[in-house]
Image (cartoon, rainbow, N blue to C red; front, side, top):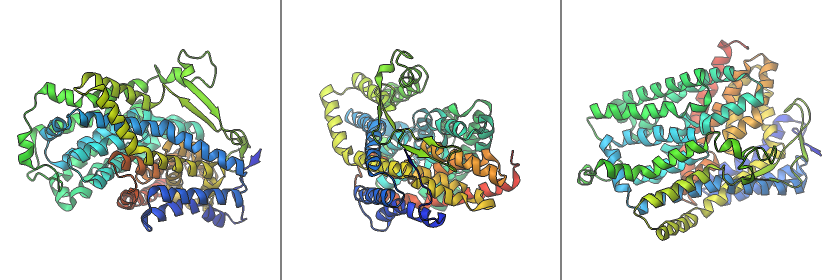
Length: 551
């Protein structure tokens, strides 16, 4: 069994700098060199393998297996989710429902600042809580494009909105994982999440309005946006403290959606903001005569989608399927999950101190959860939609073919990004970065969120980030006399800031608006906000570390 080496150059800072090279290569490729995502990812992967093998000592066979693991994980569940989400969207377009959807959203408000709050913030937050894994980014970006938003701006709105909900995605799994891995009591971590993230989350709707319409937007709808953000954030905080993380994105965002609709029924901005290229108010008026039944039918794909995802998020399905690896007799549907242990990787690489307290073999099992994957829920939602819509099965499967043509390159990009992540994780490079930051001593809380940012940028997942680094955060907190729950919460929140610009999120966003190969445009638009939010979070966590007791 190969033991990971975290300081191969006998200089922690220099080793960390070398370990960061794949990330830097990828970012520079997208932002400075304006490379296509696929090309930047290929260069980053080659860099990661070269450094992992030649500098960090990772066995070459293990690096190849890590690449294969990344490709399998990229295809399932992530690629499967994206393909099904875009297929459902294309079915809805083919069925001719989007004139009705556009009119129904405009009936709430024709102001597109309000539409972003409805679609990207409220509906996207609900989808994040129910499913996660990029579904809200894909669905909301596509919906905004249909409403008349320019594709890059639509992606930016969907990505920024995810800041307020990303920590509690897929029924709260990131926070649950953070508590489990770190050993911090769940109630303590929940309370710290309120302190660390919810104040920033409350400002997200205000940020969306300012990004869209600057000072004019701030003056005209800023108070509404702030009120919505505070209401949802307070509701999230209450659910987090009194119930737990599972429903933090479900109940508050549904309440926020209802609240916004009620307010819009009583008040409208004096100036109606429309995006350049969006349908004019006159055009909207000419298509506004739809009945309630027509509106419900048009939205039915997303109603069905929400219902299926909620069903898949309950123990009814997940509990039966996910027990496959424990015992074949555990559940009636256990056979629908097929575990594959990666050769030369599973159990063949050991994490060592100080990342873990004692030597621990790393698991590398790809689970082909055929029924339990969220993508399967979307697949069934698509089939139901075809059955109840005025679209033939032949036309629906034509759209599936079109979705694959649209998405094969973005899915390949996701696979390459996951391969880079796995090589860095199993090669010890991600841990080398984290340890270098942890070595700064008493000012570590200032840098704590950066570890979470790196974790999500590399893996694309707040869950994986907490799996990697929540234990390190808790251990470091104990060593420097800081609050363990605070730093694990900082790790989670830092990861959320990285979701705005993580390659996986960017690839999903680009795929949903048919911008494959133009990921650099979305990255350039989003990275300044990701880094600014990260800087704000770092300062806030440091301030909290000086105020809150260690235990």
